[in-house]
Length: 222
Image (cartoon, rainbow, N blue to C red; front, side):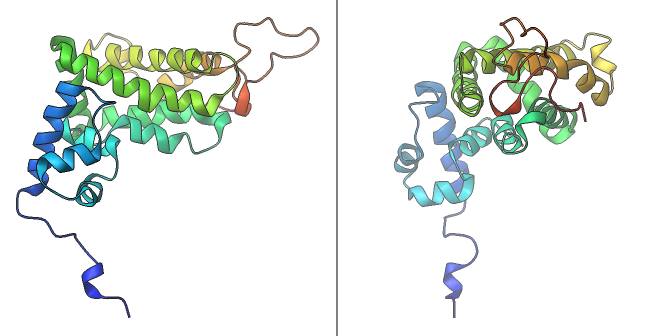
């Protein structure tokens, strides 16, 4: 029979989670995303590293919590990337738009982007996190020639849409329904990810698909 002590919440003093977040926030801003480890945060906060993992799951989770994000877009994209690669572009855009549309997760994201525009430390931290947890991970799944460049262009498309719609609130993008945005942006997102995007199509046939079946004409927009 399982010991009841092995179930439920791990032991931690009142306020322990807040202390961990305080340490993590300062370390991320001072040292950058790559240099910070769960073990280093745990040591400075005076807790076992297993407790940090219990509260936050991973460094991505700790980062999101430290910057007061209800949901970390990097974690959302990591889950989205596990699905069918053919429909990844439109699914990624749909999932990210849902984060920004939701009041609980969207408000902290808007505050983070606004803060990054004013504070170079936050700008560098967000850039480093995006490079390592989003662009590098997408590139790893793509494979093939120029995978990181293609992943970077893909993310730049989405970042431009996010800033235009949610920060600058430029029309008509600011008031378009998400489904319409997905329909308009999906072709360019597919093209960004396609390994053959910068090579001429072979005569007598359609342009080839990139690794994992991702290509300009692959999949539906739904």
